[in-house]
Amino acid sequence: MAKEKYITITGMKHYFGLKPFKVGKKVHCRKEPDNRIDSEAIKVTIKHVGKVGYVSNSPFTGATGTMSAGRIYEQVGEEFKAEVMFLTPSMVICRVLPKEDDSGE
Image (cartoon, rainbow, N blue to C red):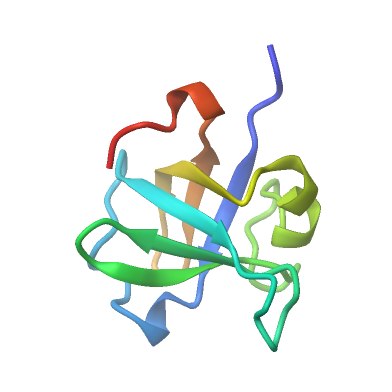
C-alpha cells in the first residue's frame, strides 16, 4: 500500500476564507504551470464555489508532515482530488486521494 500524502491549503483569506471547507469535503487540485509567481503552483477549487486557495509551497505556510506543492508536483497528474481531513483557524489539511478514489465532488 502506498504511503498517504497530505497537503496544506493556504491563501484562503484571498477568496472565501474557511467558510466553504468542512471535514470530508472533496477539493479539486490543478497545476498552474503558467502562474507568474510560482511555476509549481497548484490551484485548489471546490465545485459550485470556485477557487478557494493554493497548495502551500513554503515551509512557513504548510503544516508539519504535509507535502509542499514542489514536493508533490511530480507525483501527481495535471489534476487530482483531495479530501479535507483537518481544519485550523489558518490551515486546511487534506489527504491526496488515489486516482481510483478521486471521483465525486
